[in-house]
Structure formats: C-alpha cells, structure tokens
Length: 344
Image 1: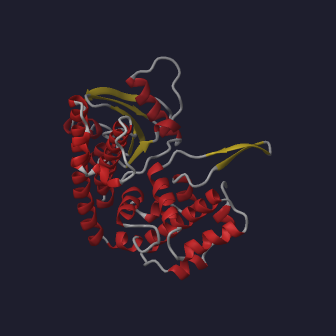
Image 2: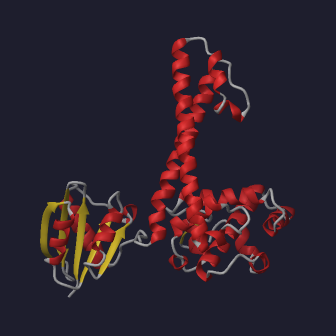
C-alpha cells in the first residue's frame, strides 16, 4: 500500500502528513528543516512512499536531497492546487498535498539534478545583474534629463566628464553614485558573460543552438538552462504553450468564451520573440518565412510570433535529436497553418 506524504516546508520548520490509499492519516509531525531531520522522518515511513511539496525557494535543495529516499517525488505547482477553505495552517497545507497526491491531481514543476539544471542559477544571476544595470541606466538618464543634461548617445553611461557639468554638490553626489553603480554592474555582467561563453564552448548542444538564426550564446545558454532536456516536451505545441507563444481557447457547450495563456516561462518567451526580431535583420530562410506571411496579409505582430514559434520548434528538434541545425530541413518541415495560428 502506497504511503502518500505531503510536506509543507519552510525555512525553519517542516510539517509532514502521511496518508494511506483510503485517505486515512497515518502520521503527522513537525520537525526542524534540516537534512538530518528530513531523512529521519522519511526513513520512518514504510515503502512504497510518494513525497509531494510545493515549488518554493528551497524546492531544488529538497528535490536533490530526498529524491533517492522515496519511490517518487513531486514538486507541486502551487497555483494549480485546490484552494483551502477556512483557516490556513501548515498542517492543513500538508494534508492537502497528501490528499491530492493520493488522488493523482498534482500538476508538477520540472526539477532535475543534472548539470544543465545547475546552469540555471548562473543564468538567473546574470539576468538579475542585467536588470539591475538597466534600472540604474534608466535612473541615470531620468536624473540627467530632469536637469537638461542628457544626450541621445550611449556613451553618456561611460563618459565621466559629464559629471563635471553638474553644479549642485548634492546632485553631483547622486549622479556619481549612480554612474559608479552602472559601471560596476557592467563589469560583473561581463564576468558572467565570459563564464557563460566558456561553458557554451564545452557543451555541444549550446554550440548547435547558436547556429540557429537569432540565437547567440547567451540565448542558447538560457534555453538550455530552462528546458534542460528535449524529452521534457512531447511535441512543439507543448513548448509553444509553456513559452507563452500560443493561447488556448475556452469552450463550453460549443461556445468559445475567449482564450488564455498557461502559466509558463516568461524568460523563454523573451528569448524566442527576441530571436524572431533579430531574424528580421538577416537573410535567412526564417526572414523569407516572415516576408511570405506579411505578403499574405498577416500582421507584423502575428508574423513575428510565427517566426518565434518556428525557432522554438527548431530548438526542440535539435535538443531531441542532437543533430546540428540544417536550414533546408528546418524549413522543409514547416507547417504553414500552425505557424500563423494564435491558439489551439
């Protein structure tokens, strides 16, 4: 008889509930969040045992630590869990996880302990520094513009002589600190890019993705760190949905009430739409695909999104097969209807 374990984990304590196949609670316990206590509790539960906990900040650590101690581990996507009525407690949350595990209604979040998944932390940190730098640049631009000093030239972010034109001491103090932050963040960002470039040269799959028009090594490493394995998606439609490149129709009794996107990866959407925009500056077959759609009356937005879906499909094909990018094969497999549709 399978023992279903619901674990409500926090930084300091964990609450666990063990439930049998009939819904009877066999065990419940609160213990400190530590490797020793987690392993002790799991070892006290008879096999076969299935463990479920929500996606959170420590989910990856829990997954790597506990995956070999149970027969199955599931990381639940919190927005898809059934809402709990009444008061909210750690015990009720753990009980709900155990109950939905027993019913088989858990929507899982993908986790892995391979090197590609580990790359995600490096890519995420690079993105954070990039966002910090952009925020500081916008702050610096707004500060100078308010004083009539800003000029439409990117060198303004590296030209320190502009600070000498600021007369008020307090204004100069603020501008100097923002300027310093911009350049310090730029140096850190450059060190991350050097690290990612070194990784890209060692991993063949990243080099193969770089052959796709619009995909550079930064976009390739981001794709690999998020998708991890081509086997994660059964077909390109699943990847399109996860990347926010298609919408799903809401239908009841034969009537369409609208369409909506699923909760997926906004980072992948930015990568694929950014790559589609870059393609417009090239002479590749993907640019030919865009021009053909435009000539048929498709809007610029829908044509770009079609190219983004085409790029996503090519990425998945390469990650599944391990083969290098062949422009003739990629375009030969084109499905015009699926390229221009916005929902399925």
